[in-house]
Length: 170
Image: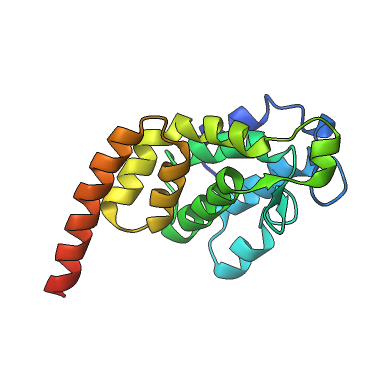
């Protein structure tokens, strides 16, 4: 197993103090996240899912905020494409969801906003993902997180045009 900055960052979080969608604390999430990063098969990726922990039916729990930050870090690491796509999917869930009603009652009504702020740590990595055409999910994440909507509109127009031209050639 290689040294991953995202897993070192995970050590800085007091996971046991955070609410998780599974009904327990978030104490188990660093191990789940590490298994996802090291997954080599579709089955291993499915077993290491963050669904049911960061969210339940797009409703977010408090653990989603540090997880969004870990994903932002992990996207800058060397990852197999299926793992990268799964992380982008989880990040999209974090930035596009909304707080679970129990989180609203606990005083966390806008978890998605904090997730969007955390995702900005990877803004240029997300633009790179979008530019490669491998992950349109990156486009939807950028739409939610880039505070410079003029920049997003400019990149979006250029990249959509290139994607359409490439599709016509094939």
